[in-house]
Image 1 (spheres, rainbow over the protein chains, first blue to last red):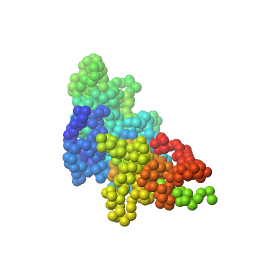
Image 2 (cartoon, rainbow over the protein chains, first blue to last red):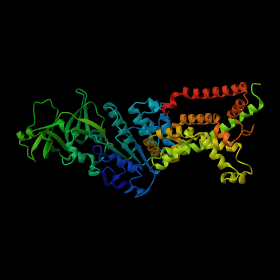
Image 3 (cartoon, rainbow over the protein chains, first blue to last red):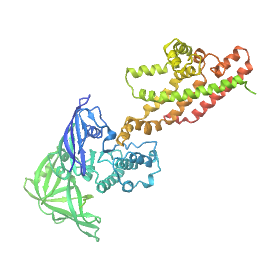
Image 4 (cartoon, one colour):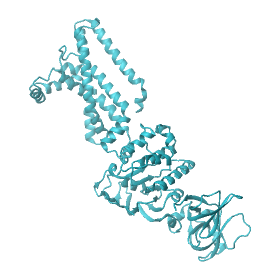
Length: 357
Length: 225
């Protein structure tokens, strides 16, 4: 698969230095994860050609050379779509006008009616941006960037300005667009939850340097990255639907051959499941009287202290891993040692998305 | 007849002068305002000051220097004579040159303000959608500044209609050629013909008031739209 190769060394006037040399595969969603001020937006701007002042960089997108030192392809000649945090619709144009703006300058043919349908925009076409909600604006911005017909879509914290409910809804739209269009994306975020839902690959950036990268499930299952320190630390599991039990309105899933119950009826097929470390506890014996439905046999694989009171456990299933966040005191009392056979109790789970077969 | 034939000539000439000057002002003022809206340095400030100079300078000063430049033995005057075979001083083209310089700040300043209000992030967005600099100007900057363009054109036009000193210095007072309304009015006052002076003066007050009223009625432009 073709890739975007980036090599940037830059120090700005405030002493912040960006030093990134990496290759991002042009397939699926790559999340650029890191705290604010870590250089994520600068990196996206460089890729898009919006930082002509940064001349110590080379950027190659598949067979096209975008930048080699001071020789730069201008932003309008690069095959990228850019979705900004603040949508940035052209205020003098309607929704339709904004979409046509991109379409009139299209790089390669795209199915406009499909994009409009995926993002549910047909009822908004005649409105001016000022008459749209924040979530609607962002959906228009996504459609507009796609109508440019780029080979790569850049998204800079597109949900940061939205409330929880709207952000969640918008993320569903994005997942749909990503699955349906197969357009490669680089998704910038500092929120674990977003990243675990949308991303296939993960680049962790800190202080202008990429400190870790890899498939998202693999990185999230590790204890030695800063993801493990995040309050929202979680493990991602690939699961398949076994059957639906209409009497209790529960669906039985299979994870590495073990049963796992989630509420509601789930569509058949493979899904990605996210289990937050704080929702998992461990016990030495299989509990016989508990309200907790999901108990999985696991092996303690690794332990790491996080913060002053807690530690993170890495629990091995047959093939996949779970994370559990427990107090250091519980660890002492249970005398947990690496290699111990334990039972993991899971309080809550969330289906994140259906995996394409 | 309310106005005499020479007075009608003066009205027509004034409108002709104002229209011609306004068109030229927009053609020169727009790129100049765009350039100024992107300047931060010393050169930008210097050019901005030059453009604003007619706001505070007595028109006679500008007229005096123009008169020297347009004279048949000065270089610009010579060039003009060489190309067209006519004298530049005391001609209609001389009035146009004077008006353009004199009314320049009234056109450039509203445009410059409007252009600099269009944010860099919005232009960056247009760039990622495939618009080059020229395209960005016509598809983003200009549409977002359209009210200011109307204001600039109206102010340039009205100010040219109302000019006196520069015209007197470089145009003289040739009926049908360089005698504009304000000069005709001055003539009447000189001749103590206050009746006729009143008609012209009242007409100019009415016209200017109407134009400004129409501009201010649409208050949106003050808010930058």
